[in-house]
Length: 347
Image (cartoon, rainbow, N blue to C red; front, side, top):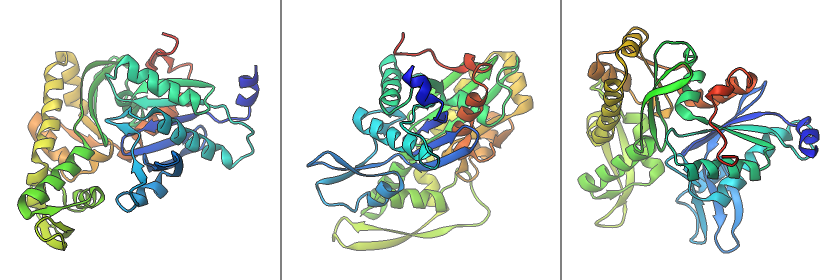
């Protein structure tokens, strides 16, 4: 009864609970929050000092007792309490702009495909404990496909490749369900790690995670480019311990990223091999759609297209596809109820 009363003053929200970034969709308003999934904690008192962008700024710059950490690893909850506090923070922020005493919204959360029952339960419980009156779960590739406006409820094949921070989800969807899929724990974070390893092995240089990500964004590519790109890469010399700068180009970074990129391409090819022929014919006609932050890596669409002999498109605003997909479902929950996962708490 109380939940229903407070629900009248709450706004339904969809959350793309990502390893690297959390995006929040407010019903009727669109994507209202896009912040890093980072929480800064005082380890002596277990007090949360900052969440999101404020915490991200602290990464690698704090004294020993203050730790800026990600509560999600490979898209699933690794620290239950901190995930709960992060979700509560974002839910409260959505409702701050309008008067809402004790918000109790319905919350739809995107989770990776193929997570275990325990991981599903953790995501659902964290959402309920953070203040949701009802928690729904949706598989991220399905949400991404909906956000990319693919006709997933028709009897036709749609293929989505969602490359996030912790996982890459490849799925062929028809009639509202996943027909063939691959979920691999190689994505943006692994590419950052590739660049860190490259700097260490080739230049005896230690890079920070944020520097590696910056190099990936500014110089990274999946396919040879017409115009050469060069950027300075700054870190600590492992021999002298002093600051050092080297110039790297797109070819070097492409070589560093090669293993991760090839693994992603292989996952796409294997998924296509497992897809029924009629749906493959649909995909050849409609093409493969890339979503997630990894879709923005230069010429990744060209490499996948060449490797699969199929057209490849990048979704409009690929970073927000999952969040927008949760929003579409929330706007028409009764019609699209079939795409939701059954509750792990009631199951």
